[in-house]
Structures are given as C-alpha cells and as structure tokens.
Length: 277
Image (cartoon, rainbow, N blue to C red):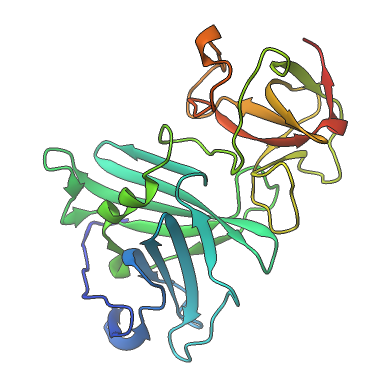
C-alpha cells in the first residue's frame, strides 16, 4: 500500500464530522463519548460505513454505522474494559495496535487492528507512511472475517489509549475480570482433555461466572498443558504465555497476591482439565 498523509479531523461528541472519501465529502456523527482514538471509513464502495473507537472512564467503545443513513451496525456499541481486555502494542517503523472488543448482541469477539507509521524519535504517529485499520474475528477461529478501512480516511490519536489503562498490568496480555490470587493449594499444572463444545477448542473466559456476554479471548486445544493459578466453583484460573513468552513462572513471594502478569489469564471449565501436578 502506498504512503498517504494522515487525515486529522476535529471531533466532539455532538458535532458533525466530515470525512473525505475518494474525493467525495460525506457527513457523519462522532457517535461515542470520550476521546476519539481511531476512526475510519470502510473501503466497501457500495455500503460505506464509519468505524469509531473512543476511550472514556477506563473503557474503550467501538461503534460502526452507515455513512449515508446513520444506521448502526451494532445495536449496542462494543465495549472493552481497558484494564482487562486483549491489548497489544508494538512499535518500530510502524506502530501496531490490537484491541479486543466483545459484542453483547452477537455474543462474539471482534478485534480492532491498526497499523500506523511511527516516529520513534518523537514517540508519535508519523505524518506519512502506510496507514491500515481493520476489524477481524480472533485468530483462533477457522473462518476469519475482516472489515477493511480505506487507508486515506484513517484518523489516529493513540495517546488517548493510555490514561484509560490506569489499573492495567503489563501491556500485551489480557487479564481476567475477576481477581486471581495464586496460593499453595491452588497452583499446579493441568492437561486439556477434550475440545469442549466448539470446534475451535476449549474457551478461556474473562470471568469465573461466564454467560453469553462474557468475552472469550483464547482457546485451548486437546492435549495442551496449562498452568493453574486459582479456583472458583467449577472454573480454574489459568496462565497463558503470549507475546513471545515460553512459560509462566511463579516465585514463592508471588503467592497470596493478586496475579498481574506477565502471562495472560482467564477461566476454564474444570470439566475440560485434568490436573497433572
């Protein structure tokens, strides 16, 4: 993709927003509260949509609506807890961002991907370079659905991401929404015994009391071994090495304290786990 200048617009919660899309001006609304951190228009010329991501009060919100009619794609905006959701940030000549959202209406996850030119010296988005943004189903799904943005419509103000994460642990992992406290009588190792009820594997939930609206950010496969940190009812809290980690290690002084990384954490139905240590 060729380098394009970054488009920046003036946003407010109520003001109209003009997006220039391939030479034609269209009007849309800034439709979520807080600071707009990312925005774009999709590259589908037949049904042009606007995707907007805002940060407010330790949450990220994602809305998607048709530019021509204002009709919302999601009846309920996608919400992500900034302190616990899947989040990845990597920077070199490009800054790469991933944020995990959960659709309450559809009971399925949606991941926002953003790829921006990065000025490493000034720690900011560069004015020119490759701009890419898209929505995608998680990598563990067999069928990946992508919604691509037109590169010349992408707005990015990633500095708004950080203040929402005031209680987050190490960047690059996802965390349980429930406190996890490893103890001598709860830590151990377990083997995944079957694939659960879905062909993708055994879900790792964000809560020990999951419902259809509980985010699922990872899937375990039969035969995998996993570290156990805590227990709550029928669920076990697990630690998952992500982002280049090869294992999850606990020091004796970590016992009895809430776990905050570096490994990702979530909850698995103990019916699918066989404790081996």
